[in-house]
Image (cartoon, rainbow over all chains, first blue to last red; front, side, top):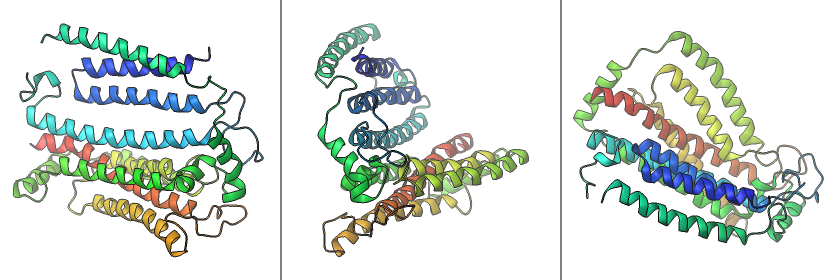
Length: 114
Length: 249
């Protein structure tokens, strides 16, 4: 049972990648990429979890109470911000691609046809 | 290469990757039994050393402030990138005609929706200010609060029609807000140097209890809140207005 959170992370990573590879729409592709990235949040938060511990907010609990790890939570915050910026850039690129090729389907892009 | 062959190759690759991931993650500490040292040290020291009760914010804006500065600049650069990609038409004659055409063809905003927006937006904005101001005490902080602030203004956008495409562009104000917020963090860092310590040293008095504690942490929260709110509004208004431009093209 203790491996379950990590198994969920692996599953999200793989299923997100599957979506990226099979996607027929750039917006859908970007959302699939966020699913891949969501797996990294689960890994980070899963590592820092301690059974029965409180959240690392000492507004209403005394200092010294066992808490889950605050450092990995701060890392997750960074992760979320980076994801948001990547998604913004990719969506702007999708807008540009649609303007140039008239479609959002990666298969139809003339310049990328192999 | 046909789609089927490509998918087969991907299937083999992803199966290998999944196996490696499972193998790697199996070597991590058992779920629920993490014994990392740094987290415990931070959790014990954030209240005595910084008088701030949210250990996560203390890590983000003080102990690890330098990383957060880099993170803020990632946001800044990505906003610039989005604008460079989406504003290719700006400051050209056809671009101006296109914008006039887009504004002319924009559907008129519904009055009842606009009223609802004017009622909702102040409530969301107050919540955003609350989350930014209490970042060092309770969950939240500059990043989360900044997004809520942006959401409050986007409520106005969604109910009145458009932001980026206007004769007088309020979106330029938000670009300035983003820049001021990003630079504010640098100023806080330089303040540490002026106080005779290292860059981003927490140089302000820590206080004892209440809202004005944590030294530079609340200030850093405010500057990040401004940067995030400005950045999110700039990017989203530009992205959302693309549908008007597209119709006019």
